[in-house]
Length: 141
Image (cartoon, one colour):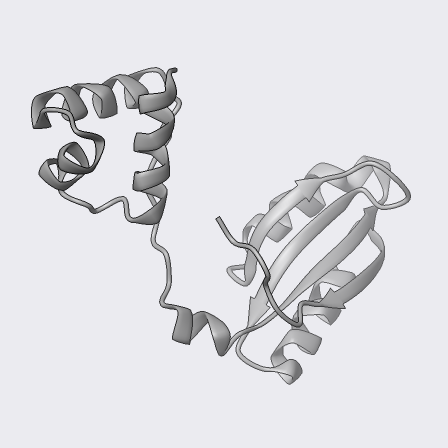
């Protein structure tokens, strides 16, 4: 992967639906070259897929939190599978330290966030949780 591929990925992160012709113009390459690069990045598994980015106005209306989770060792996989089934769980990371996982969650209100955190804490195999509500996002890429 070279600098042009990195620039292409950065443009796709901004808007994965940008027409190839626009990407080519911004990168000062031919449309065919950009299309070939995208296909190569996909074949190599560097670009694994595309997703939806929600409008800032909608996102600002959600209450987000980091939920630190300690799982009983024999239940860690089961806890992970249960969290994968909760649509409000945006991301789940395995971490080092006194907690095993950190989930980034989003809910429409504080009351719904409270219920969500209680639900996560009640999952079979969850030993304890600790939450921090996100007040603002300073950098998002």
